Amino acid sequence: MKRNKHIPLTETVYYILLALFEPAHGYLIMQKVEELSEGEVRMAAGTLYGAIENLLKLKFIEPVKSEDKRRKVYVITQEGKNILLLDCERMKHIIATTKEKLIEGGI
Amino acid sequence: MKKTKFFFNLDKEEEWLNDMAQQGLVLSKKGIKYTFDQVNDKRLIKIDYRTFKSKKDLEDYILLFEDSGWKHLAGNKNSGKQYFMKKEAHANEDIFSDQRSKAERYKRMSDVWLNSAIAYIPIVVLLYQMKMIDIGSILNPRSLYLTPGLWELTGSSFWKAFLFETPFALGRGFVWLLFPILIILYIVFIIKARMEYKKSVPDNDFKGY
Image (tube, rainbow over all chains, first blue to last red; front, side, top):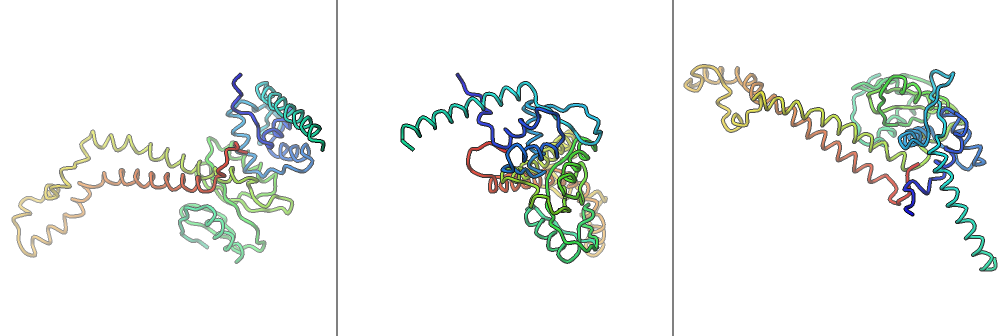
């Protein structure tokens, strides 16, 4: 099977997609990413804006209507969920294989 | 206070603006010239490069920066360069959190110039079709002078008539050259921006963001 060319996702993209299971605007995404990663991933505004544009282009996220007229709000798409799942499976395999090797190696 | 300067490299421009800010002069407007306001707080200034389809898109972009502690100092929807000043202590130290997204400013810059260069091509084609582009006049500049009997005149009466007509002759013969020159200038900018991009983007194969 040919592997999806967007896999592996970067850590920031992965967290942005996770953050968008509920609709959120840009700054809220930044806060959620920080929270979900336990403070490990702190995105700056310019980087996040570029990432959002890129994810919109890939149709992994889409804009949704909201009460906030000035800030755009986004949510993950089905395609976004699919890619997240694919990457999760990939990581699961890595983790399982690593554990096996570590046990074999006696660490 | 106003100053005229041209920067190609965004890091150097940031450096200069931060030096000015250290002297209490903070950018307040950027057209052809930089306009500075005298202020008391000296804060970090950073530059992004982005154009927008609509005013609404620009507003959404500015709000994201404001929410995260950066004040928009100057820039409009078509200006490309967007200037920000750190206004809150909790804000990050930069408007980019990785090297790749920072480098991509130059990629957007080169795309904007590419579009400008492309926009001039129909003008050149049109001028050519209207026979405004006359290669022959470069080889025979005399044909551009229309004063009857000019070339038979001698001495000071020749020079007077010749110099009088020269600006008109240049206008007739070479105004079209402006457009190819502009296109070439844009191509130089495109290549320079691509080089800056290549220089600053991380060489490994990891995808962006």
